[in-house]
Length: 440
Image (cartoon, rainbow, N blue to C red):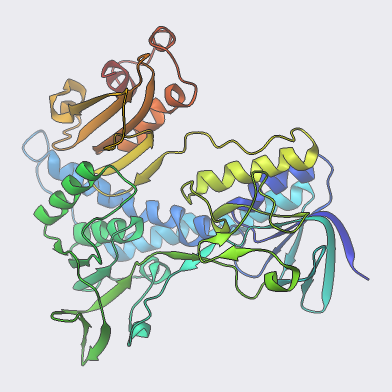
């Protein structure tokens, strides 16, 4: 006999628990099936671990900027202690998230779930049925399909390093590749970054990306563009990454060539759920090709950034849909993105392209702003995009506080505030918020 629920979620990350908790609290019978750590990638081996490791990196770079400006003597990063701190920060998160769910009335089921039919999930020798099922299984690291790929490591392995190798080679120039290269470089490793093409962070404003790469190169990064790995070999105490006409000798290899949706071994083919290499296909209500089966989070095939805030928004949308609060299609808000390097790179909204018309683009040199001088932002730029009614519609920044700048500007972009409405926002002074608003 199957246990019956109103909603069953496959996976327990942000694509699940941010919606499952309020859904259960409002009286729905909800179950969450998880074979791994509660909370999914972000709390356990993603955002939380990454930003914890990065805090000393960001501070070290800021202290370096203040040499001769009130500070003397640069600190060094104790990576073992940094790793221990990371473990302390994230160790309690799975139990905390599980506690939030169970306190709200969610039933947690440990094990791997597979579809039996369009209303039934099997876990080991038990089955669970539901009116609605949400697939929120996330993604996993992509691995290069070349000889010797097993000699490389993924992002999970990097986050578990207790000591940093002398020389690290990073393959890939997306979020993970740039962020981890920056960390290792600042912490004292020699780092080589291999880019398959000529552009890094392709979804970001390229002039700022190029400046970021130049800064990292100035700090010692060895950057190789249009470098396609063909094999990895072990040579005694070292490894070699080979291309058609070159090789890199290194101590440790990070395969940062992207992430892939977790769609395998769920039984999707059996029940007819459509998916591609980009993820599960859904309609404008996040429903799959099978009625009553939905998907949220990074497992989706979508144009929006596959980020934690996107998954949270989707999960909460499904809660409102299932409770009857709305029957409207999902309407995504402005979703910001940030790369946690030093300096940070962040952006949101409409950015200039060769096809962009009827907009005004203003680029500000951060070194020219008096408040940025107090924080020794020695490099970086801010880009603001306004429409023909002088409303802010997009922004990007390369700077030490870029994430705070974009968060500050986000309401103006999301709600299309007019200049008169922006004047009604009185910020604390002096602060980064005041500096940001005064530049518009």
